[in-house]
Length: 287
Length: 145
Image (cartoon, rainbow over all chains, first blue to last red; front, side, top):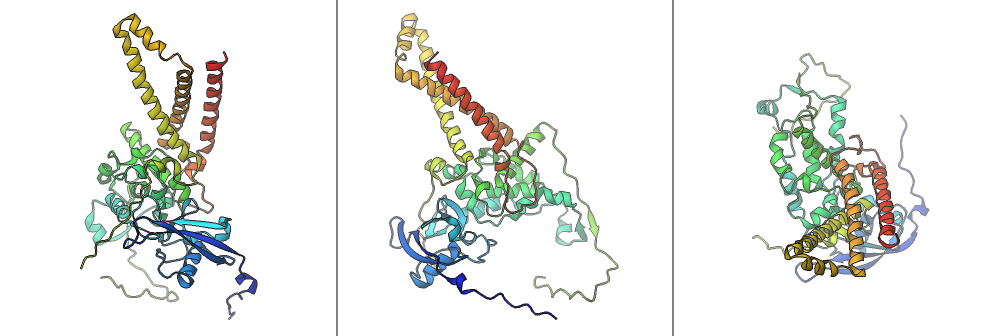
């Protein structure tokens, strides 16, 4: 059996390439009346991300610096910040690629600041919840006690899979100029998720989402500035989803919309013989 | 014990239309579309006020028109034309794109991501070129012909 060893770390990889100034907007609700900038000198090595820089500051210069982070690989969506003029994920951007001697970091605009770089995302998640971002079906019994799987073709999957990649980082709302002046606008993230479920062939909840979507603060408040799609770190393209929602509504009014094909249930296989080479799944933890 | 947390407001407001960050051209087109729309609305109010002076008779109308025959108002009239040309042509683009046309089809996102904003950009550039040509010819007509 071949043995795979971890690649050796070259000493040149750990060499400090240059020192970069991190200019971070700090705010402490207990002592500050207004946010103020603070500068830190950070030695940069190859492959170092902005998040690595913040971790270095926290470990070596100022332990009181507050920010959110978790996965370090652009999956959890925790480390959204306003970095050098754009909302970005700190873990997704290497310092060298920013090509600047000073990196300005602020908390995400359009969200209240809790502390330093930590935005208050409560309103964001309320908007997400308001569009019922889950499968709605008339057969509730089938959802609770499934007798099989809902059929979905690969083509039907492609209709919505792009929009299902949302990691709820909130960058799109901080980039949106409509959100900047309208607190009640549902926003690109929630609207994109509404489209994601509306076009899913297994979902039957489009009617239930209508009231929220086509209200005065719904889809028609978007005027395709496109900034949400520009900053999305996962290629979700929320602006596209919103325009497609408008198209669906427009076509429905003209009675020329494409009807969603209804799904059907494929019963569980009755004579399933497990493959002995495949290990059994662990016991269910939720019953 | 519930601790009262004092959150700092960080809403961009109208500044966010223009100064939100280093975004693509479409975001600035959005801001300009709104500003030109408000400008045209202000012009219409003034226009109704001026034409309404005809109710007061011929002399009243001539007095009202005479007030606007100055270089500043002529330049203002050109700005209205400029705003109208931009707003009308960009509005056509928005009607097309906001109804989901010329934006491509939904697809699996593969890095580097190509979004609907990129896919409609030829339309955006084309519309801006046509607007620029109309504004240049209109400006020549205002001042030189």
